[in-house]
Every structure is written in C-alpha cells, then in structure tokens.
View 1: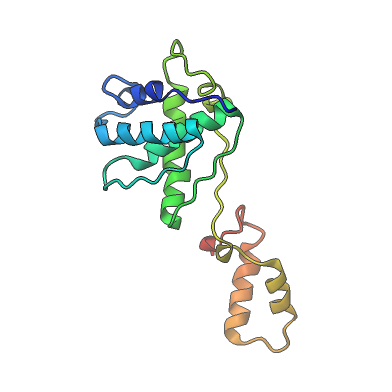
View 2: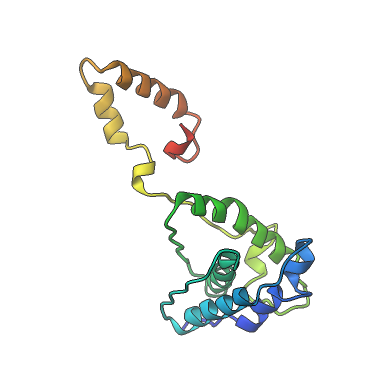
Amino acid sequence: HPDPVDATELAAMLKPGGAFSAAFPGYEFRPPQVDMLEAVAGAFNQGHHLMVEAGTGTGKSVAYLLPAIAYAAKNNARVVISTNTINLQDQLFRKDLPDLERVLGKADPTADLTGLRKPVTSSEPCRAALLKGRSNYLCPRRLSALKARPNPSHDELRGMARILVWLPRTQTGDQGEL
C-alpha cells in the first residue's frame, strides 16, 4: 500500500504566500491549477487513472509534476510521464523540473514535506531521464549496415560523415543534435 501524498500541502505551495510566489517574482496564482493538482494527487493516492483537460495558461505541467515528484519520493517509486510532443518533453526536462527542484529546495524547512524535500534538494536532485521515441535515436545496426554498403550515394556519404563527427560528441544519441 503506497503512502499517500498530501494534496493540501502541495496545493499550499501554489497558493498566495506559498513557495512558488516566494520563488518566482510575478508568480500568478491560478485556482484551476490547484484543482488539477488536487485531482492528480487524488489519482495517485487512490491508484486511479485520470484524464484532465485544461486550457493554455492553467499551469498543467506543475499541476501534474508536483504530485508526481511527491508520490515518487514518498514511495521510492518511478513515475513515467509521456507527452505528445518532443517540445513539451524538452520543456519539462530542461525548464519545469529544474524550476520545481529550485522551489522544493527552498521550501520552508519547518513544513512537513515528508518524502518530498529529501530527494529534491540541491545535494540530492530529483532523478529524471528524458526518453524520446526510437525514431529520434541512432540505430547502431543500421549505421553498421550503411557503413558496409557498397557504393554509397553522395547523400549517404555526407550523412555518414556528419554522424561520425557527431557520434563521439553526443551525450544523448538524440538525432536532434545532428
């Protein structure tokens, strides 16, 4: 039985005077964001699926990431977040998660953020991995087949040269780096 996350405590971070308003000058409180956060936390706590539709500007990313991080930390579990676009994946990984880590690292140390503060401090960051669809990665088998191909075309040679220059430098294997 997983430990439930405290939706009220998480929602308080988003409300006026909470951790987010302290961390981000000009932070705008959005009641629909709190509603969504509470629904997501409830779905985690009850082990249910949840489908939410919310308009632009609601703050959806924070509304699902915050309970996901809390649940994962509290239960030593992994949470998978699947997106429809690579741009949203990049936003979550490069902007939203670091912003959340910063806020959680500065959260009120007297608050009972059991299971939430510990793994999300500057000394022990939230662990996350960015995985894109396999069509976004280089296939070693296909590269070997291309290199072994007799009489490659000019375009194939040019592509192979770009890959061979890029390959030792890449840290992700993401073809978007090419």
